[in-house]
Structure formats: C-alpha cells, structure tokens
Length: 231
Image (cartoon, rainbow, N blue to C red; front, side, top):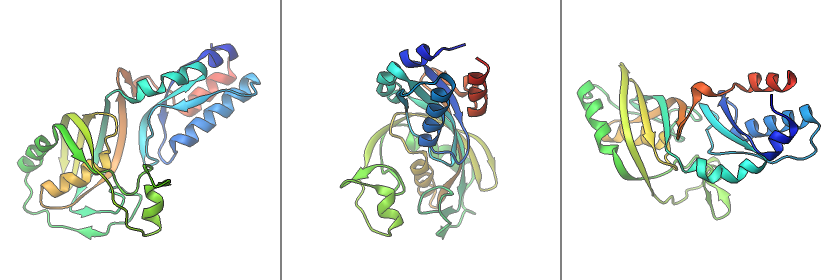
C-alpha cells in the first residue's frame, strides 16, 4: 500500500466520479482523506480535466509532485459515452436547466441520425455552453447566464475523431465520442439537434477514457478511502 511519502512524491489516482459531485468536491474529499489518514499537514492535489456534476466517469487526480503533469493529462484525447434526447432543448444544453423549447421529430429517420454524425468529424468550430465555467471579463460564463445577462461567446477549434451512434430508442440517441481537449459534449448534443432540423439536449454523460487511462481501472471514492484506512 502507499505511504505518506508516496503521496507527497506524487501519485496518479484514477477516480470514477459519482453523479452530482463536482470535480472540485472530489479533489477536496481525497485531499482531506489523504491528509487525515497519514497526518499530513499540507499536500498538493489537483484534477486533470473537469467533469460536470451531471456527468460520471474518469477523473484523473494527481497528488504531490505529479500535479506538475496535470497539463499533459489534460491535453490528451478523451472518450465519452452518453445519451441525447431529440425534440427539445434546455438553456444549459443538459438537465441542469428545464426544457425551454420543443421541436418536431417526425421527419427524423435512423439513417438521418447516423449520417448527421459525419458533419462533426474532424476539426470543427464549437461554441461552448453559456452555462460553463469558462471565464470572460473575470467572471464565469454561468454567472452571466444565471443572472439572465447576455454575453458574447467566441467559438473555439476542437477535434472529433470518432462519433458513433450505439443505440436509438425513440427520441433517445445513445452515442460514443472520442474528442480533443476543450470539447463540450453538451454543445455537441445541442448542435446535433440543429443539424437534424430539430432540437436536442444531453441527458446522460460518462467519461470512459483519457489518453490510455480507462474508467474500468478507476476507484470509486468510497473504495479509495477504504484503501487508505486499511493501509
């Protein structure tokens, strides 16, 4: 088992983030548990890429000197699986906010859905959601959004190497995406609806891979904490 010195020297921890946890909460929880288990006064702990509270899956958490590698991990391609719902949109592009518009879907065929993925392969311009943590003029975009203030959002270049439809159940479309750093799957879901002359929002999201790291090898927070107490 790891020692206090191991964590201070630097560890890369793979954590399966639960639903409704923020990435910040996960980091704080693990930092506190490591400090408490080994009676460490101070230790650096950080994550390599935020997951929204409504998303689950792989979170890379680095301790000690390995926090210097966070930028390297953040730059690696990521794989997600998820579900989008055709025919309606929300301001946040996911279930954080209520449905604000509905659209017809009778014209959409399964062939349309599969063909639409091709429009997103390669390098594309994507507009981040207004409900995001990106900073503008010293404030997070979601602060403007929650205050009902309009704000200009600039597009950014992102890259999608794989976009696979894994299942269709009426208006629910299940998918797998491999994409670059900075990609918002919520925005992808919203844009997907537009391509189909309808609307769409994200209803579920799970990050399965970051580079060569896979969520199958990740600890639940509870299992990791238990490993500290049985050292």
